[in-house]
Amino acid sequence: MDKQLAPILQQLRAGLEAMYGERLDRVLLYGSRARGDAAPESDVDVLVVLEGTVDPLTEIHRNSELVADLSLEYDLVISCVYMSANELAEGDDPFLRNVRRDALPV
Image 1: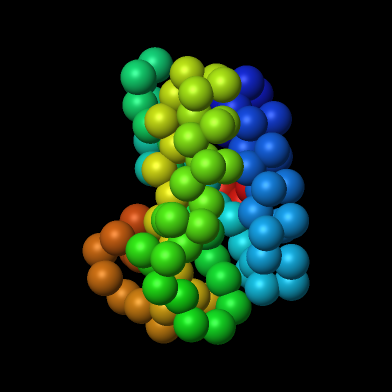
Image 2: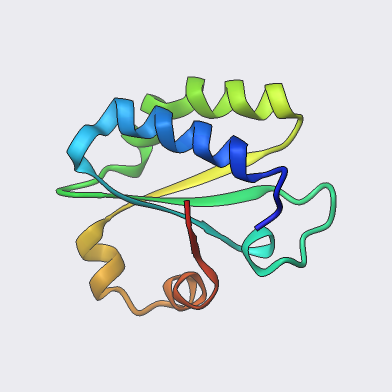
């Protein structure tokens, strides 16, 4: 992981921990930033894994201010995907296979 990215992701994680508490299962960086082949304009792909039922649209709305503030402050695009711990454990689509292969814990 890029050393400049680590403190930004820690701020994101801290905000998510404050919002979700023990419901936050894990936060994973995936995609080009996790693989180390990102271009300067590449977005920051983050998978937010929660315990219980997850409605991605609700979670996007809930976290939009946190994500937008960090994106503006650091002049980068943070793209969060939300799913349940069960979906991550049991899913076997190409997206999840790529996440499992490349993801780094935040």
